Amino acid sequence: MRIGDAAAAAGTTPRALRFYEERGLLPPPVRSTTGQRQYSTRDVARVGFIREMLSLGLTVEDLSRCADRLDLLMDGPPPQCGASGNGNAGSEGVAARRLAVLDAEIARLTRLREQLADRLGPVGRPVR
Image (tube, rainbow, N blue to C red; front, top):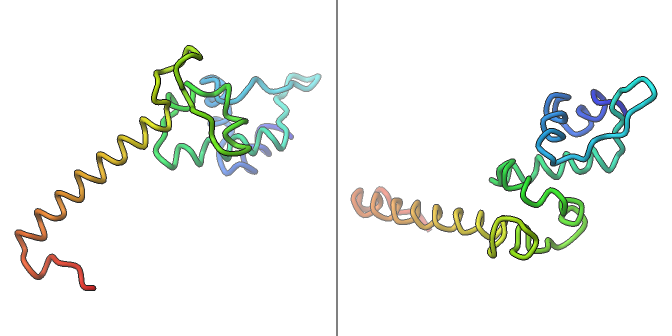
């Protein structure tokens, strides 16, 4: 399918598909005899997965570090993304680092909520 159709099927724009291609998240698409990009249903699924991972807090840079394994991530339990030994970004992996950041933020917000609830008294306490 052509870029406009693929973008619509993935819920995004042609510009986003070109951006993902430029950043290495999508492999260069097959070109028609007239030079138009041609995308498969697998490419559309990959774009959907990329968008899902971005919505979960990963960055384009995070995904770029493990772009060569995005198809594996789409298909099943994720291997260590960005693990050492593959020339990528360290021993914890992209996903593990992002989870650690989220855990730290949750802990910070929980402490903040508890401080505010203590300051406000019974008004700030959840009803159970």
